[in-house]
Amino acid sequence: MTTFRTLQEIILAAHRNLPTPLWDFITYGTESETTVMRNRQAFDRLALRPDIMSDVRDVDVTVPFLNQTLRIPAILSPVGALKRFNEKGTAGAAKATAEFGTMQIVSGVISDFEDIPRQSSASLIYAVQGDIELKFPDDIARRAQDAGYRAIAFVAEASYFSRRERDVHHNLISSRKSPASYAGYLRDRRSSPPQVGNDMALAFDWKLLDLLRSTCSLPLILKGVTTAADARRAVDCGVDVVYVSNHGGRALDHALGTASVLPEVVDAVAGRATVIMDGGVARGTDILKALALGAKAVCIGKLQAYAFAAAGDAGVLRLLEILEEELVVSAGLLGVSRLDQISARHVANADPVYPPHPLNPFPLVMERLGRA
Image 1 (cartoon, rainbow, N blue to C red):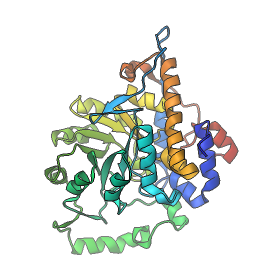
Image 2 (cartoon, rainbow, N blue to C red):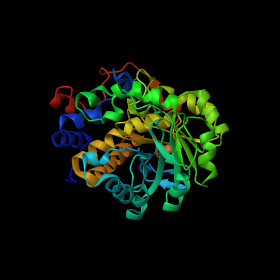
Image 3 (cartoon, rainbow, N blue to C red):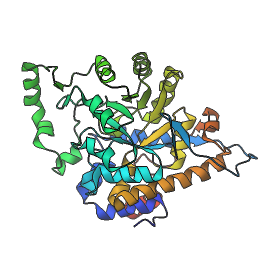
Image 4 (cartoon, rainbow, N blue to C red):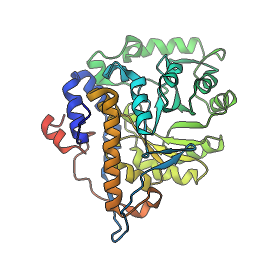
């Protein structure tokens, strides 16, 4: 199960193991799925520009992040549904994270989040999940710090559970989350406004960051930034890491691809915070492109889910190993021996080769599955 030679073999194994509803759940997104496609196309519109005659006998693909050294600039994104793909769930992914030597962001939707650090030596970040239907204790950040988490991330881009029509079609979502439930639900919310107390019914406001920071001393990450204005506001509020994300195309439909907005966010942050991103990352070359545009690291969600479905924590470990192999080879071919040598001069705009599709970086998969 750990002998996968390519990312394509991992994805094909996931396809064999998953029923169609769960395959669609991982692969696609909201309504017309335009945001999903734009995430991928934003990377496809970038070409790499190599430097030749460079000494690349020893390529180092490690990066510093939050006072640690990541073996590669790839962090596991918060995926709350990991147990749907393998019974080991988040703890299994944490095992792979620790063994490989990177970081994992643990989804705030799992109930046993305080147990995960006890089961793994992994470097973990806790994601406070933002959703108008959810409540979370106002001491959640302190509890995460006491449990051993290294940072707090607030998920700001998904205030409403979006209309994921494939999931509706496959009956994967609860009635509470179904689009048909929203009209009555919103009427209830208007008649009973959110109350702040021991359980805080979430009101999306920048003051919420003050609450999280006031209850713990951990670095604060804001996930969901896609504009220069929000990036500037985030650093003005003392955010340590600005996380560019559109929820993998599973929140607002018709948003811009994250690689498209990354440069304006990096410019707005102006070095006052670290910038990371997710959305459409599928290859080592995508990671190099993100770094060239100013990101310190990327986060991987879909790839993580495919690998977990293919072979549990062993699949996630092998995924990270293959990404490392791709990074070393591609960085060497790009003419850099350290990732901090990569800059905007290493990328250029180009016409995409393939039509937009979340799996177009994997031509063998597309051929075998008939465009999946």
